[in-house]
Amino acid sequence: MAPDIGRRLRRGATSGAVVAAAVAALAASQAPEAIQPTTDNAGGDRAVGTGEGTPPSGEGSATGDSPYYTELPPLNTPPKQPGVPGTGTGPLVVTGPAEAGIPATVLSAYKRAEQSVRSTAPGCNLPWQLLAGIGKVESGQASGGRVDANGTTFRPILGPALNGVGFANISDTDDGAYDGDRVHDRAVGPMQFIPSTWATWGQDANGDGKKDPNNIYDAAQAAGLYLCANDRNLALKADLDRAILSYNRSTEYLNTVLSWFEYYKRGTHQVPDGTGVLPVDRSDNRRPGGLPGTTTPTPSVPVSPSPTSPAPKPGSQDPKPGTPGTTKPPTVPTEPTPVPKPPVTSPADKVAALAVAGNRQLTAITDSDFTGVPRAAALDASGKPVAKVNVRFEIVGATDTRFAGGKSAVTATTTSSGIASSPALRAGEKAGTFTIRATVVGRTLGAAEFAVSVTERQADTLVRVGEDPLSAATGTAFAQELQVKATDKGALAPGVLVTAEIVASKTDPKPATEGPTFKDASRTATFTIGTNGTFILEKGGLLAGDKAGDYLLKLTAPGGGTLFVELKVTGSDSTPDPDPTPEPSEPGTPEASPSPSASPSPSSSPSPSATAPTASPSATVSKA
Image 1 (tube, helix red, strand yellow):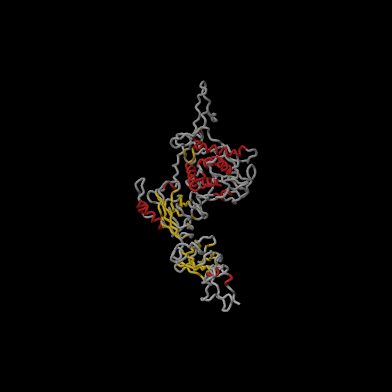
Image 2 (spheres, rainbow, N blue to C red):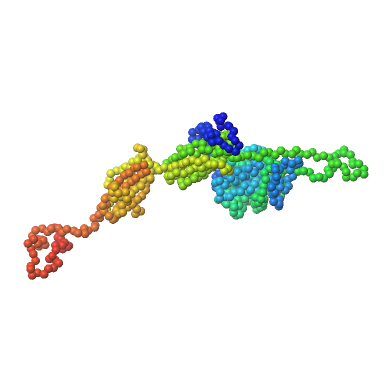
């Protein structure tokens, strides 16, 4: 990064010059049009959308019905705690308000998972308190928040072997990759996914390139997606119950999770990592014939001893006579006060600006791939790039253009250079302009916007293949085939939309009101040029109509291509002439027409037959 990019700015403000310089430097450092792995497409780590099928059924649940903690929350509403718990002079007492405390990193993971899932599945209405309730029951909030700075547990959290003894019988599915057991599967991590479920729903929510069930960010987001499967709306009680039961098929489990869910909804507070309250009672401890050797984790925060007098140490002197009960108990060593960790700041919290890093304007023709994709840069207040930030790209406007997978919105994660790139973009069949908007997930910063346009495919020339005239008698269909080739700048032009109209003349742009029609009785139609650059109007595709005459089929294409094809409609041979002319008779025949000198007798009365030489069937005689 150039030295001037690292200049510090006044607190709370970001210089436009620094942002511009940072964006330029970041954009220059990227490979040309390199599309980074995203967190929302089939090819990579997906922040949203992975496993959009139904959860495993039958003997499958998210946890394999593994054991869980059965302790219920206190009956009293958790009050808001002043300051940071655990900073007093003595050890933290694990009763009352402490039950409402959630370790900082674990709480951050739950809230980020809610934001990510709500960005693509708002109809699910996933609350982070539900994830907290499940996390409490499954692992005691990742063993009281014993996680590193990236959210990964210091030691794997494993359930018992699912060998059919008191639990489901699930043979190994991951060759021990996640649970270290090559005979049977075990539930893994703070949200207790069995390996087969994780294979479908696993996520990389913290952007480290791994889908790790022992990472609270990855596991919380996977749990959120799993709960939202099958288009559930968790604001509905029936869907909420079904979602929890899909995690562990036990009515007691359902009631326990719901109890913590409601408890956390009434109020929680953040506590330092590693100081969370650990539950003790677990469901397998109360089962007859439960697994031997099952261990229960001990609280990570020591409990102050009761103020009772301990027994004297061996060798200690008896109390003085006459002073019963005045013996001073031995001093109990005081545990050192835990030093609270600073609150964990997510990468998104460090972002001061989101800027366009490349391809501010994108163009493509209909039904084709764009040559570039939107690229946005996440920068902090000094103009430095911020990695592992989830950036949402959304198509805004009336268009059928979509990202890979047919999505109108996707989420990508910034790389170490602070750049997030959307998946590949494909134009639909609709031409027009619209916008792609990039925003930081979970923040209200200004958006980075990209102008996108889709233009129609064009052809500057349309020519007819073949010269056979198109003709038909009235009342019939044209029996000839019409083939047309489209080119643009000399090259074949597949995919071009051609408009066909039946007109009376080349100078009159209006469709004809009589004469030929298409098979649907209209005089206007559209055709698409095929991949070979031509289209064919099959025999019988045009009807002659009932009016004889000469017509034209006008073909036009975007780009200026125009072609007129002559259509000739003739009268039917079986139709009699309404005013036939009588054939002259041969000389000397009795029916010969009277000579000009012939006239009626003065005494003759006029009659219809004597006044006009009108033709009638009896007036025409066929030649001998």
